[in-house]
Length: 145
Image 1 (tube, helix red, strand yellow):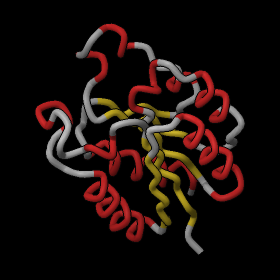
Image 2 (image 1 turned 45 degrees about the vertical axis):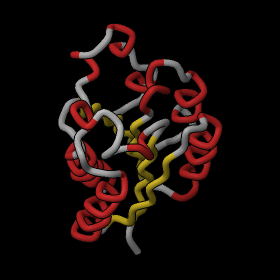
Image 3 (image 1 turned 180 degrees about the vertical axis):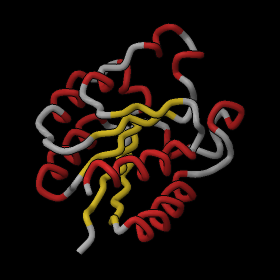
Image 4 (image 1 turned 90 degrees about the horizontal axis):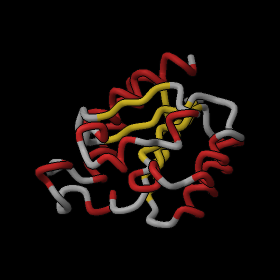
């Protein structure tokens, strides 16, 4: 049986491919899921992708991951800079966590330079576009093996 990796996505990522393509590119969340599913099969990992515009739903999925996942890849989006609740939930998860950002948050507005999540993350991938998800999946495969 393969190990499952939760890939959690925060607000507005449901609009990938439509919202600010000059920043986030033209790939959709469905495209990312397909790429991660394909790579996951190669790596012997199951993938469960979830997106929500609601902080509490993301927290609930982190709680579910405690019993169901070998690792979490998370793009908290705007919650990166605001959510102590997501950080607290991740602190209850005893397996690898990788934080992903499509854009380089450090080349953007100063308020985006702070991440609550980075303090818990085992790795941070920022500015690699949607390829950041597959990079994270490759890295998390080494951490959970």
